[in-house]
Length: 412
Ligand SMILES: *Cc1c(COP(=O)(O)O)cnc(C)c1O
Image (tube, rainbow, N blue to C red; front, side, top):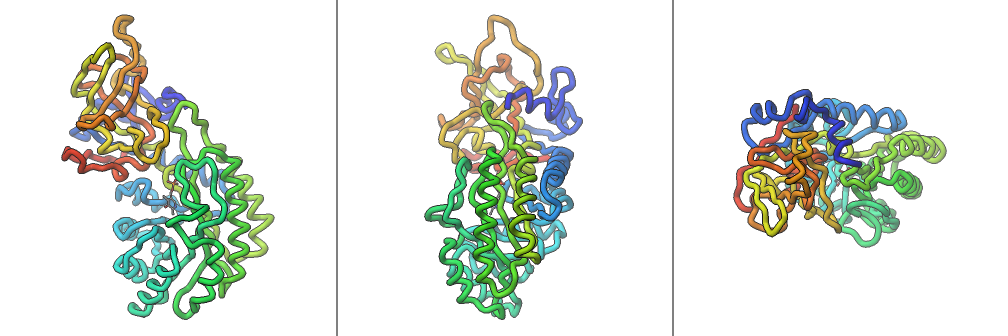
């Protein structure tokens, strides 16, 4: 997808980017300082609507809070989705504060501490158990609190999902219980000690290939059907994960959501509904729901030329938006889409045309935000906007590195 397509998703007023109806200069004044993250509430709502339209009615939609845990964002999403998935006690507290029904909050992630398990069991959320020893600790916690823990087993499938930006299943993993060990684990636990509702399989993130997601869902359903025979009760919970990707780079094409939804509908009708009639099937999406709703806005503090190359130094950087620097799990560094948000359509004069390298203000060569980007030649105080900043931005970045102030986040 090209930068123009990202721009079009927001809108413009003359030469200015418009975010949620507010021209960028006015927005920057309202926020009061740069850099900042701005998330568009209407864009999130619209995205949830698109997903709901594409998915079969019987599939519940969950939000994976770690993609963007800003409390206002989670509050907004709480009213739009069926469930919230958290990955720490901190995220659990944010999710509970929204007033979301605790029985529709799930807690995944390796390394849950006893204190976290205690809070989760007391709250009544579904604990997605990642190992045999975690199951034992969960049972013990339930006994201590005299509360029957609600659990699902997170399964590490034998298959891997190709094409994922981050692989979290298949082969040896810190995530989940290996599929072949699940029957024995289920044989060890008593329904009097823990209510095992079903299974959770999440095998990868940032996938743009509908055919691969469809295949992963089919294999997941097959696996869940097999494992369900080992449950004491009928499966009531089947979390198929997610992994839906968004386009960051020019070569990226949008995920064919309609295709994924259609095939999932057929899969459930043909394979699952008759055999697991009690099961609530859900998907949990993070990035796909919020990633495209956000921009990261920085101000140019210096411009310089070094041996023939133009540089713009901005007041933000990898300490706020690590992913844009290419250091958040990427194998090959590519530029995130970006624009001079106060000078859209400005093509510059003939003399100063040519690519610009946009760097952050950290004293490390890693702090590269845009490598040879086609932009009008930046001037001090111009606003460099980085798109696709609504997921895995601020909270996925090393904010303490170099001791700069934290940026503001606003939900518009
Ligand atoms: C991170 C995570 C997600 C969300 O992944 P996205 O790629 O952002 O959709 C979903 N489920 C679990 C268990 C996760 O750890």
